[in-house]
Image 1 (tube, rainbow, N blue to C red):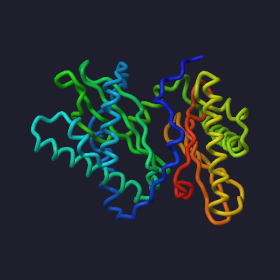
Image 2 (image 1 turned 30 degrees about the vertical axis):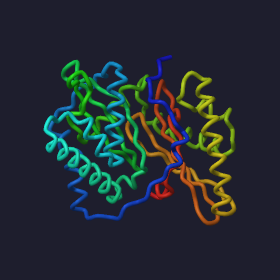
Image 3 (image 1 turned 180 degrees about the horizontal axis):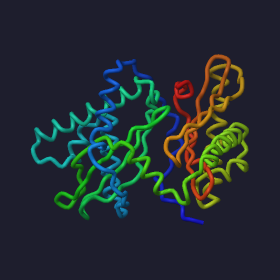
Length: 306
């Protein structure tokens, strides 16, 4: 069996954070978003993706930079950007921040990929043109899609620093698909994701850890069981808290998954109560001939209505 690609550490308890939906904007602005997000990628022919060698220091810089961009931490961003002129450095950081905020607002307001889930993932790094250069890829999650960003880094005076931050089009999807082991799914196999999503949700809502464990992408098996146990306990906690907050439980509804990429599908499960609802999201990856659940999150209720 092929080795499962290394993934960043999981922190399931963080998925209780929720985000709001921003107001709608015009179709003209939506068109501008498409140009901003995809323009730089369209001007370059797709290049083979080559993984960068492991480097914890570069990964830490990548993490802090993306967090600074999304959280508005200008001070941290100024420390990480490789720009010798102080005034120019502040100008570039503010420009990157404003473009990121605008892209997030426009994507959420367009209705094409739904509201922003206030969730991002660092996927890993690909090699740069030289040994002391690399590109970190991060993915911002929306209800029905995502935005991909590239953090270009290089070694400056012995330390990794950011030299550019830009949209990366479909690079994140290509990166994820390339790293998963085995052949891509056939059209028939792609349809199997819906059954796995439904089985996982049923196991979570019934507290069936044994039933969920074989569906977990985490390896080795004992770690898959441990993660399923954690997800199951958190899910049961949310279900009970829903009764206290929204009144009697009325059941759940499985929503059909959509394809984020060839090997990545996303499914939702809506949990209903008398006066409200919760929305759960499963991220499924196709590896070694089967769909497995990579993440299970509580997300904003609007995601189940997008």
